[in-house]
Image 1 (spheres, rainbow, N blue to C red):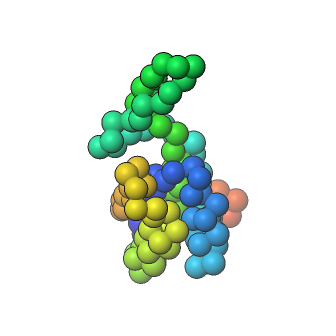
Image 2 (image 1 turned 120 degrees about the vertical axis):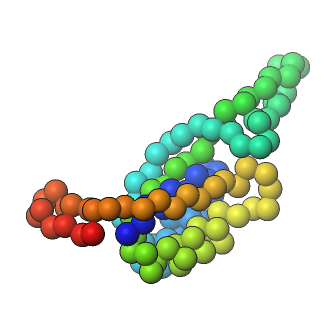
Length: 109
């Protein structure tokens, strides 16, 4: 199994969620996060002055899927989150050794 973490722009979240549901990926954990990448933040105009915002709001989506579903999941996320502009986000794939359902004790490896 793999854990896929995707960090995306907040305004793309509903598109990504819909794409994941259409592909059968219903279980996910969503976290509001802040971060920055190569763009190192943005400069905004506020009351006639410039303000540098170096940590931008993002959404982190976490899903645990079978190894065979990873490529399909990545395609769904990239196709729905991509705008072609700096700051679209990042996807990380990590190994998962075991998953235990608390309600039933069911274990997957």
